[in-house]
Length: 428
Image (cartoon, rainbow, N blue to C red; front, top):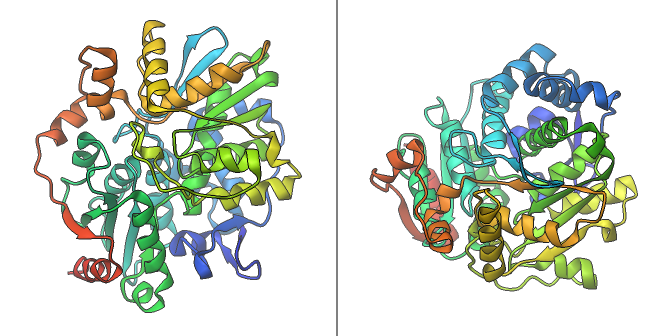
């Protein structure tokens, strides 16, 4: 498998190189030079989750890793399911929160950890540097916790993720260093990009990123779109609409790659909160990010989504007009109303899923089947959900355990020199 840098197409790397580097020169994202043909999609959908995912990922990786190795990687990473739950007639929820940190990031984080172990020769330093607006941090921290020769540094905006999200990954210690940054998630992402632009620093600490910018994470996310369709009635496959809660746009990118591989999807719906850079762009053609606005769906509080260039590249490669993307932006009040409405239907959700549900419910047409992504367990946003519903919800054992532990985070300003100091100290 070869991948090219979206900013410098002449820079081409192998899967292993892309996993180890994270980003190309000029902070460019890697993109597959070819999209594999998967053949009989109906037969593929009859396979079990691990076998099907191994086949999908082997098609991407090619001969670089043998099929037995890829199967082991997938089996180790995907030790939990992605069930589909019916919310009402023709509307389903894809539940991506059954992993160890109760969020969709478990799929990508754990597969990336397996990938990095498979393509590394064991020599030299590896430091995973990533920014999180909520769930990435926990998934990455738990995926890499205790792995030999790998250090992890995670940046997050102080006071802008839920307390239980914070406790889930900022209580581990060991090879995991967490930094509460006085700023926004976009500030955290900017610091990560600065670090990757510093050639000396990158070499000294062996920088790698576990954000959805890393191609291995993105590839893992393709797999649960196939798993979702496999669980739906066959009659629904011809008129299927996915609604994707979107912040950094990795999930949407993965879904569109799944469609490029042959997954039957009629269209995608881009669902954002008040940080609506993409919906406004799709309407006006003008890319004009605003200041990031804090919302109750904090994992989507992103004004400048990193993965958007991949979506534009994919549309260009496939000849898909960007105008085919349906879209909608949802306020906190509207998200709360939709969360309440689903609860009255007997389905317990959280703000990010509620946003995807609302836009889907508004735009679904007669004869279509809608499927929206639920990216985290409602208990990860327990304060918000309980206030909206006016009742308490049960706390899963994982959250209860970490909720009682001491925070180990450092607090730093959005300052690159301070970050460099943290990265060097993490090597000790």
